[in-house]
Image 1 (cartoon, rainbow, N blue to C red):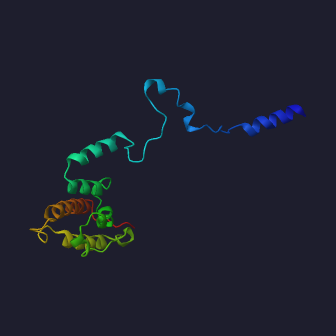
Image 2 (image 1 turned 90 degrees about the vertical axis):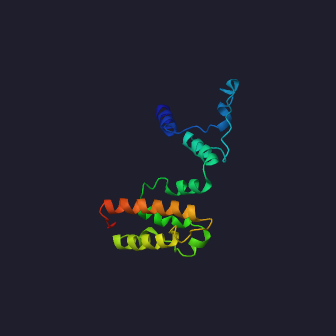
Image 3 (image 1 turned 90 degrees about the horizontal axis):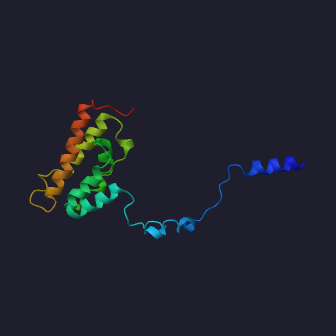
Length: 158
Protein backbone atom coordinates (compact mmCIF):
# COMPACT_ATOMS: atom_id res chain seq x y z
CA UNK A 1 0.00 0.00 0.00
CA UNK A 2 2.82 2.39 0.72
CA UNK A 3 4.16 2.38 -2.88
CA UNK A 4 0.61 3.18 -4.08
CA UNK A 5 0.37 6.14 -1.67
CA UNK A 6 3.75 7.43 -2.81
CA UNK A 7 2.67 7.04 -6.42
CA UNK A 8 -0.59 8.94 -5.79
CA UNK A 9 1.32 11.67 -3.98
CA UNK A 10 3.71 12.00 -6.91
CA UNK A 11 0.80 12.19 -9.37
CA UNK A 12 -0.97 14.88 -7.37
CA UNK A 13 2.18 17.10 -7.37
CA UNK A 14 2.82 16.61 -11.08
CA UNK A 15 2.26 19.81 -13.04
CA UNK A 16 1.72 22.00 -9.99
CA UNK A 17 3.75 25.18 -10.16
CA UNK A 18 5.07 26.43 -6.85
CA UNK A 19 4.07 29.98 -5.96
CA UNK A 20 7.09 32.26 -6.33
CA UNK A 21 7.00 35.86 -5.21
CA UNK A 22 8.11 38.57 -7.64
CA UNK A 23 10.90 39.76 -5.36
CA UNK A 24 12.39 36.27 -5.01
CA UNK A 25 14.92 36.94 -7.78
CA UNK A 26 15.68 40.55 -6.86
CA UNK A 27 19.11 39.83 -5.45
CA UNK A 28 20.40 37.99 -8.54
CA UNK A 29 21.08 41.05 -10.69
CA UNK A 30 21.00 43.80 -8.08
CA UNK A 31 24.81 43.93 -8.01
CA UNK A 32 24.82 44.96 -11.68
CA UNK A 33 22.37 47.82 -11.15
CA UNK A 34 19.14 46.07 -12.18
CA UNK A 35 16.05 46.08 -10.02
CA UNK A 36 13.22 43.61 -9.85
CA UNK A 37 10.60 46.27 -9.33
CA UNK A 38 7.74 46.17 -11.83
CA UNK A 39 7.64 48.93 -14.42
CA UNK A 40 5.46 51.91 -13.66
CA UNK A 41 2.29 52.36 -15.69
CA UNK A 42 3.46 55.62 -17.25
CA UNK A 43 6.70 54.14 -18.57
CA UNK A 44 6.85 52.69 -22.10
CA UNK A 45 6.79 48.91 -22.19
CA UNK A 46 8.55 48.38 -25.51
CA UNK A 47 11.08 50.01 -27.80
CA UNK A 48 8.28 50.96 -30.19
CA UNK A 49 6.41 52.69 -27.36
CA UNK A 50 9.61 54.57 -26.48
CA UNK A 51 9.97 55.70 -30.11
CA UNK A 52 6.38 56.92 -30.14
CA UNK A 53 6.95 58.93 -26.98
CA UNK A 54 10.02 60.60 -28.49
CA UNK A 55 8.19 61.32 -31.76
CA UNK A 56 5.24 62.84 -29.92
CA UNK A 57 7.58 65.29 -28.22
CA UNK A 58 8.92 66.55 -31.55
CA UNK A 59 5.84 66.07 -33.74
CA UNK A 60 2.93 68.43 -34.25
CA UNK A 61 0.17 67.36 -31.77
CA UNK A 62 -2.46 67.23 -34.51
CA UNK A 63 -0.29 65.03 -36.67
CA UNK A 64 0.40 62.74 -33.70
CA UNK A 65 -3.33 62.44 -33.05
CA UNK A 66 -3.98 61.51 -36.70
CA UNK A 67 -1.13 58.98 -36.59
CA UNK A 68 -2.62 57.36 -33.49
CA UNK A 69 -6.01 57.23 -35.23
CA UNK A 70 -4.69 55.52 -38.37
CA UNK A 71 -2.21 53.21 -36.66
CA UNK A 72 -2.99 49.56 -37.27
CA UNK A 73 -5.89 50.29 -39.61
CA UNK A 74 -3.90 49.99 -42.86
CA UNK A 75 -6.17 52.28 -44.88
CA UNK A 76 -9.21 50.31 -43.81
CA UNK A 77 -12.10 52.68 -44.51
CA UNK A 78 -14.48 50.80 -42.22
CA UNK A 79 -12.10 50.98 -39.26
CA UNK A 80 -11.37 54.66 -39.87
CA UNK A 81 -15.06 55.55 -40.12
CA UNK A 82 -15.89 53.59 -36.95
CA UNK A 83 -13.22 55.42 -34.97
CA UNK A 84 -13.60 58.84 -36.60
CA UNK A 85 -15.48 60.24 -33.61
CA UNK A 86 -12.34 59.81 -31.48
CA UNK A 87 -10.37 62.38 -33.51
CA UNK A 88 -13.13 64.82 -34.44
CA UNK A 89 -12.89 68.38 -33.21
CA UNK A 90 -15.85 70.20 -31.68
CA UNK A 91 -17.42 71.83 -34.74
CA UNK A 92 -17.15 68.73 -36.94
CA UNK A 93 -18.35 66.39 -34.20
CA UNK A 94 -21.75 68.08 -34.32
CA UNK A 95 -22.02 67.16 -38.02
CA UNK A 96 -20.94 63.54 -37.58
CA UNK A 97 -22.91 60.68 -36.08
CA UNK A 98 -20.83 57.84 -34.68
CA UNK A 99 -21.14 54.63 -36.73
CA UNK A 100 -20.46 51.04 -35.82
CA UNK A 101 -19.09 48.25 -38.00
CA UNK A 102 -22.59 46.75 -38.16
CA UNK A 103 -23.66 49.86 -40.08
CA UNK A 104 -20.86 49.44 -42.65
CA UNK A 105 -21.57 45.96 -43.97
CA UNK A 106 -22.43 46.70 -47.60
CA UNK A 107 -20.42 48.83 -50.00
CA UNK A 108 -23.34 51.27 -50.29
CA UNK A 109 -23.39 51.81 -46.53
CA UNK A 110 -19.65 52.48 -46.55
CA UNK A 111 -20.03 54.94 -49.41
CA UNK A 112 -22.82 56.79 -47.62
CA UNK A 113 -20.85 57.07 -44.36
CA UNK A 114 -17.69 58.08 -46.22
CA UNK A 115 -19.52 60.92 -47.94
CA UNK A 116 -21.01 62.12 -44.65
CA UNK A 117 -17.56 62.05 -43.08
CA UNK A 118 -16.13 64.03 -45.96
CA UNK A 119 -18.86 66.64 -45.57
CA UNK A 120 -18.07 66.94 -41.86
CA UNK A 121 -14.29 67.33 -42.21
CA UNK A 122 -13.83 68.82 -45.67
CA UNK A 123 -10.97 71.35 -45.45
CA UNK A 124 -12.86 73.93 -47.53
CA UNK A 125 -15.53 74.12 -44.82
CA UNK A 126 -12.89 74.84 -42.19
CA UNK A 127 -10.83 77.30 -44.27
CA UNK A 128 -9.60 80.19 -42.18
CA UNK A 129 -10.21 78.44 -38.85
CA UNK A 130 -7.85 76.82 -36.37
CA UNK A 131 -9.01 73.40 -37.55
CA UNK A 132 -8.19 73.84 -41.26
CA UNK A 133 -4.89 71.92 -41.25
CA UNK A 134 -6.27 69.20 -38.96
CA UNK A 135 -9.34 68.77 -41.19
CA UNK A 136 -7.06 68.52 -44.19
CA UNK A 137 -5.06 65.68 -42.59
CA UNK A 138 -8.24 63.81 -41.64
CA UNK A 139 -9.67 64.30 -45.12
CA UNK A 140 -6.49 63.00 -46.76
CA UNK A 141 -6.49 59.85 -44.62
CA UNK A 142 -10.15 59.19 -45.40
CA UNK A 143 -9.49 59.81 -49.09
CA UNK A 144 -6.54 57.38 -49.15
CA UNK A 145 -8.62 54.73 -47.42
CA UNK A 146 -11.51 55.27 -49.85
CA UNK A 147 -9.16 54.89 -52.83
CA UNK A 148 -7.85 51.64 -51.35
CA UNK A 149 -11.43 50.43 -50.79
CA UNK A 150 -12.33 51.13 -54.41
CA UNK A 151 -9.14 49.49 -55.70
CA UNK A 152 -9.99 46.32 -53.79
CA UNK A 153 -13.36 46.16 -55.50
CA UNK A 154 -15.63 47.77 -52.87
CA UNK A 155 -16.48 44.43 -51.33
CA UNK A 156 -19.26 43.86 -48.83
CA UNK A 157 -18.51 42.05 -45.57
CA UNK A 158 -21.04 39.27 -46.18
